[in-house]
Image (cartoon, rainbow, N blue to C red; front, side, top):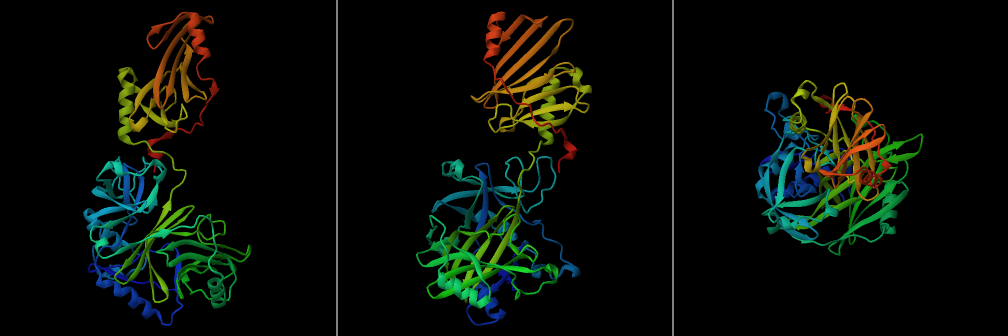
Length: 498
């Protein structure tokens, strides 16, 4: 198994690796040949393309995968830059040149972007740790933040939560961008290539796939083998039986390959390369292709159910030399956070109704989507869950809906027309019973209804400040949301959040 060291702008930067990989060559030559091939790239000091995670127009970042602070050099870490598990150098290249990454590739078109700052802390002021890709805009990541120079260039919403290629302003002056075509349906790699690789490794291919055609010339894809790869390089840190897949690039009669080692389970006779891949090697997508001064340069993304690996492929001398930037952990089913400043704002709105409540501050919270519009409302209660309050939370700007008391508790209903309601009801003294009903649509309160009953008879009613007769009140109640919408309750306290 080989790993290649890349020197970048006078600093030695070595790619971080989160998978077991080795390179396989169809050309003759030892490790030194491949190293020479990579080191030849030193003649070009133009910063490499960067992968930007675009969640939405307000959240577009190059997400850090390692602490951006350069460690203090001591005798104990003198070999820091030569540590093959350390990707600080490449990330540092991006941070040092952040303002000069000004072009983003979107649907084969380059659009202008601008660097607007670095994010290192969450809204509560705690240091953020990299290496994770979040699916919620409310959960921040550390990294370099960008925006469109022209907001009209932003992708459509169905293109959000995606990776885009961003390049340094000088990169395109020395590169020719190549067209990439993706097959409309799944197609296998050429039979002759598959057979050649079977003969070389003495293994049987179980699956192969063409992932892209580049410049009408190159074919990029993979071959997956069954069984144990017994010739895999030994690694004391990963002393398990290996499975084998090959990343393959075909250029006429020339063949470039990259071994990707997985895990082989002898008992089940199964192979796996990524968590939850179901035994199938996940395709690698080429996001951008360039003809550089030394040859083909490919920006790739390898996505799996719980990970996303990004970097570059450099086909040289019969091998695919991989420059892996980062292997991100893709976070799924994360709980939405509630930040201290948001809790403080809700507490302020809650106390505004009555200073007497200052002795019962809101401590616990639940998220609940009252009107089923995919935007949560917030339900908070005091530590004993005796009193509480509900808030709309559109654009993370809380607005008070209503307040629970010891006797007046909340219940929820919804309808099929995009409306939902929260009802606060309970005894009001003697034979009186009070009801407050708040109807929401698109995360806004659109109706406020109040009613008093005595021995089951409506005595007073009001809708949006207008007095109703008991018949009008009864007719209104018949038209309010009627489908039960009781939430799953898991009360969280702020200190529980990690």
